[in-house]
Length: 578
Image (tube, rainbow, N blue to C red; front, side, top):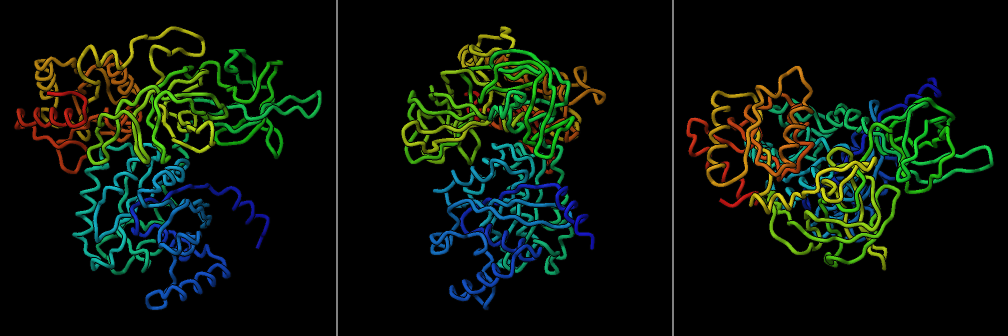
């Protein structure tokens, strides 16, 4: 065996990070233990230790308690629950994996959000005996909110329901209805028994009615390289390297995008321009680097650059703002205090900040917003944040690294919350060139029109009568005093154009504060993904004419009932009151 060739192969394997989420006792730790055991990712001494611990705990039938492989804290073993986030590593012939086993108990939801923040794939476990629980919905929403693009729903404990297909299909239908309003690019369902090993690594002989991929098979083939943002180069400077008078490099990790030697770049906040002279890595110089590589950049000109600054492509600048709107997951027992001075950590930048207002708190069951004046532990809300210094922002939906931030208590250094930036507020919004943009806020428009903005779109293939219904819906909404318009997709968009063009049109109309109806369907997955990436789930109302297609189900041959269904959905989400 050629050892060097084998080692080289291992180094070049693609890395996949995934997180296991779900409610208490759904079997997350057992599933991960089964993945490690059946893929031969456990050392003999670990296996022996688990065998001894299993015997001590009196496991049924003398079987290994595979959950003990990840439930490493003594308190976890005593209570039989996961408290902290446990990370495990294993590899197959196709990929390397980093697993985050996260808590299921509602008390530790903040730990779950931490473990999911860097994942490419989320495995959510649902107990086949109990069905979809509220905590399962909460975890799925947080995974979607954190921008995880791929979701694999593992319906576990199929052995307890005699491996019945009808139980699996009922849970699948229930969860599909909920997940259709989330922003996952892909949702896959797998019936499993983590205890018995069915459909985890090896295909189950007891569920012959399921002939799709196992959990490991899905993890080995799910495409993740295309999920990275390679369009917007963002390089937060972490450290200035000056070992001698002849070397001045700016070290850090590329948050997003690609950079080449010779690229024209701008340093923020100074706005000074230069070109990339050298790109240095641990192995030596390279001509090209991309996210998430750690590098040192040497510029052609002597420019004052320090930690917290950001290097970007000159023709592709982020927004610069002190105030912005964000989704915030509150992670501390002490509730959010409006106006209190916190530390805000954004990329490599640390600034003072406060939360000015809470626009609403998420209702996990309906995905609508409820009025709120503060956020408690595990609450998710939309807030307005004000910083004492400007930040260099991208919306989280477009750039997970530059769109995320953490709020820290200034006295105790405890993490208080984790946030995802929605947009820079218009009255403070400017680009890095200082060019003026609209001073009218979303709140201003809502106050003028009496309702929030939203985009209403059909998913799936176009159906007869959809265009007529779009204009009927516009007429009815207008008659109620709502500001509404139709974007006629037939004339504004065709298959030869980029999906981003339709999303841009919808986004411009949305920013104007309008209820925007797209007149026909979005048959291509790329069209739907581009549209979902621009909006929060509460702002995008997807309509469907078939039960197999995600969205609010309508019957177009009963137009009055269909209009009422849309109005009820807008009211339920708090977009307008009719």
